[in-house]
Amino acid sequence: YKGYPKLLVLCTLSLSSGGLVAYSESQPDTRAPHVDPNEKEPKKKRVVVLGTGWAGTSLLKDLDASLYDIQVVSPRNYFAFTPLLPSVTCGTVEARSIVEPIRNIVKKRKGEVKIWEAECVKIDAANNKILCRSNIENNLVGNREFFLEYDYLVIGVGAQVNTFNTPGVKENCHFLKEVEDAQKIRRSVIDCFETAILPGLSEEERRTNLHFIIVGGGPTGVEFAAELHDFLEEDLVKLYPAVKDLVRITVIQSGDHILNTFDERISSFAETKFRRDGIEVQTGCRVLSVSDKDITMKVKSKEEVCTVPHGLVVWSTGIATRPVVRDFMEQVGQAKRRVLETNEWLRVKGCENVYAIGDCATIDQRKVMEDILSIFEAADKDNSGTLTVEEFKDVVDDILIRYPQVDHYLKSQRHLRDVTDLLKDPQGNDWQEVNVEQFKLALSHVDSQMKSLPATAQVAAQQGAYLSRCLNHIIQCEENPEGPRRFRGSGRHRFRPFQYKHFGQFAPLGGEQAAAELPGDWVSIGHSTQWLWYSVYASKQVSWRTRILVVSDWTRRFIFGRDSSRI
Ligand code: FAD
Image (cartoon, rainbow, N blue to C red; front, top):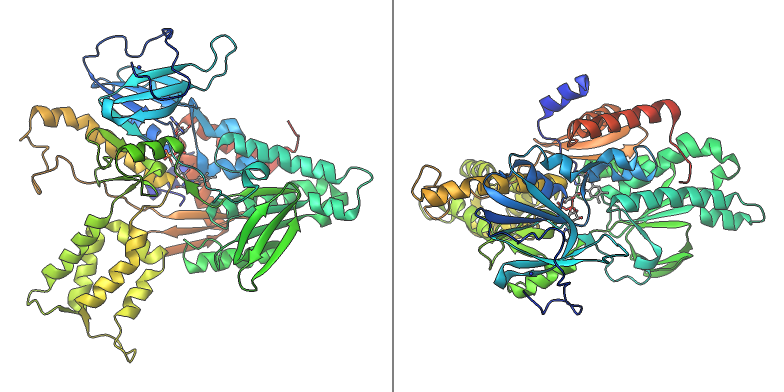
């Protein structure tokens, strides 16, 4: 989850440290915009990038602006370092410390990059156009609509919060997806305390105001719960002593464990630590509805429905496809899919010149599964359908070299043990040989997990960097079709397919302790891991400006505590 490439470098750093009419009900404004993005016949091919998140920014950092006419469309004109959003909710770091204007990031590029602060509201794949709507509300011009034409379109619009259509969630819950969300949570937490100490309230009312519920026991929910607990213990108890004993933090998780995509040791450590800290973890509970006063849930084991009053609910249960992407999926024949699907070169299936990167897309892994099976079949030289244990170990090594992401799923989803279990003989004795049918069965086990890469910044950033390298070389390849860059192995593709490298994941657990899952099946938990977390997150900042701001926020917090002003 929390990425940390180049560990050595990081540790060192820590030491030194438009003509279209039918789109919208209201027709696009025909008055010429101040700058018409399509006014000149561009000589260079036009690349339009949607989004300035992890995927879009990583692409823009390396995309050669001397080769392309690059235009960026995003409703926000900055990049936000999302892994530190939970820290913003409690004032551990300030919101402005984790954002960098996108214009600052692209100004170092050789050519001009045009940035439009607007939202793409419709992609017209057949005509290579998109319709955009400015999100800057202006009394004079209103929300302007305009069209952009492209030769290549890169969709990096991320995803939206998934409420699973649970009644009352949109209206009564906080989300933790954008910088504004984190700022709202920060104000609301303080509001809960200020309300709870008002005169004339019963103890029950005070308790209700101070009941913080987090729905979702994934990394974001757990990190927010830990941050809130630290804020309470380190700062708020001193400021609101009269109500300090009335505070309650509850994490509601539908599965059996929190942090269930992490190694078992990490999730059980987190559960034990939370129990010790007084954070309630309610597993096996499904939220049925949320009102402004209470939350109703079903406890799966008892088949009971209970209603609990709350002061604030943070909903952090996963992501869903944005409407603009859903509409596009219908145009390109992917209406039945849950997520926009690309091939391994990140090109949208059914579209020659549209790429999708980051949380908004998933790579079709079916071919990967076929490849894995062919590695097994190639090792089975006598076509007996079985391999010896030694031969099978070589096959697994080969698979992991070619598809490192398999390792991630096998281990983090705890399927490795299942694979070996499946390969035991019926008496449960150690297996002597591996049968192809058993292997297929084991593969089908991880197949569903393999279909999508995790929706993380790590994946998004690697996809952006990969696509910029491809686009930077595409012109050269087109000019020299048989040239040295051609990927001769297969003869069909100019580039190697995208391969995800998993560098590990972090889970900050509060009290200056964190857990990390590192490559090579290493697990590290404790105070030293928290320092590794600080080093990695300082080094991963997109600019020296934000790096210095974040480190100085941490230092300020150590010396003066967090700021509890409600501004
Ligand atoms: P985003 O970063 O969400 O960016 C999407 C961009 O598209 C934004 O600029 C948005 O404004 C823009 N956009 C939206 N709609 C449109 C539109 N219609 N037209 C044009 N532009 C549009 N991952 C990790 O690896 N490690 C972590 O520690 C971690 N912590 C996280 C903590 C939190 C609180 C959250 C919410 C996420 C965290 N993640 C983490 C996940 C990570 O943030 C996402 O996987 C990552 O942001 C995905 O990048 P993206 O570029 O696809 O989408």
